[in-house]
Image 1 (tube, one colour):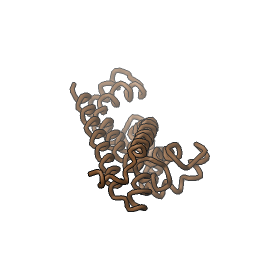
Image 2: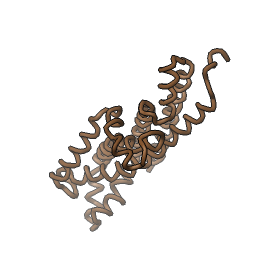
Image 3: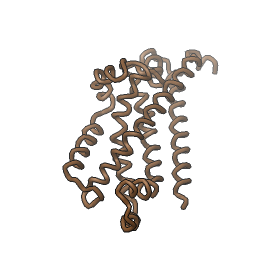
Image 4: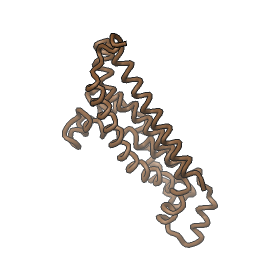
Length: 221
């Protein structure tokens, strides 16, 4: 067994885990902060909704669809000048966060929009009949009713971000993906590849388990 793990430097593995978790945590928070209001806007400006505006909905939807259609590995490269402008570097954990957010926020916005569409319209009409403003309807009825779906969307997005962080290793972002590429792939160290993949699988399983439990908790009425 020791021979199988001869190439493993557990200090490097630990550092890579910290880098991956930092990228995941930072980008997920920013993705939710940007994607949630974007999804609400997509819902509100759609046809027959509270703030129907076909032009605004078309423009927002067009931008979201473009960003969703760009493969993340290409987005990483295309965004290098903007990333340097925003955070001062395109390398390391800090340099990976802007493209991670830009790649994930539109995806999450569509999931939020879908979750809001599942809310029973009679609930909205009842709150509207009591004289609530659009803001009060969103914060007091729409989001609370759609919360399980919003949490499930965040879980799916977090799992996608794990794979994005692994791909970010191609441009020197650090983390488990970077370790797998530099040592597992380029130096043919199979044991490093196996360990990094196993850790990523465990991380995804934990995120899915936690997200499902949280969604079930808020589903109970």
